[in-house]
Length: 341
Image (tube, rainbow, N blue to C red; front, side):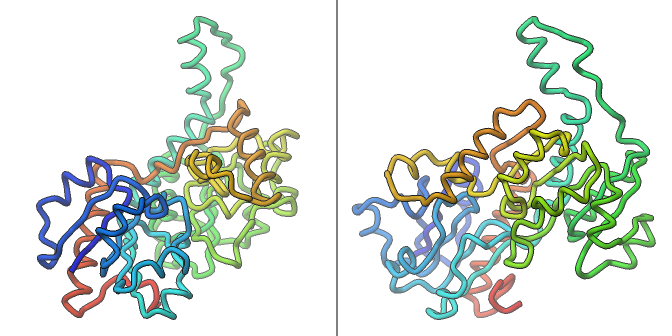
């Protein structure tokens, strides 16, 4: 049996190369699945399992997955799985497993890294120092202490953000479809409605999954309900924010700053090959890409390339869980299935 890992860097290869994984033939490829050339495809087309990373530039849909007739398992090395066509996998009987928990501290700490850079203008000051053009009156920031943070989504990451916020002496509001009453009691946070969170939070941070229901949950209507100068943080999924609406509200000053580790349709910025293929991306994608590019240039916006997960500790946890997922599946005891939830 053959297992193929796509999107493999040196760290991933070094960690995985001595893992047996059911004594299968394991192939490691640096490229993403959609960039497999004909010669390589001939060597891997009989794969029974594929492992991809969240940065794969194309949705793993019927067009791609149908090329692998023996495929039984997709092991995504991520918590999110919106890059996998689950309907087609159900139709084909392909199991899909993920890494449900690997880095609540990792992503939460990165979220606060973005927030601290925005609140104290660290990047701007550093760049000015480097360019020998310091303007002290332009670096006036604000304390996190005694300010209110609104956390949307209190899964493992959102809860860790709340713990860090309490350590900074912040007031914590939270919204979740399924409030964690014990967590609320222990850490003195307050679950409120979305409207109340929007109205009272100085900082709004997103830690919710990407679903049809919360697509563009931060839009013009939501921004209108927020405080003037609100700070927006997103280390979850880009589709949670209407990008064009965010840009408009940054320009007007309604949004005082944004720290984004994810973008809507971020692949069009991260992966040049999508544009080089000269494919018809459609007007909506084009307008969205323009808004992303404008946000990248804005002085009150910090954007990073989806690296909130990227600590050596978290990467090792991701890979360890992925190996165990694959071994469990072929041992007949599937774990971390996203199709059976």
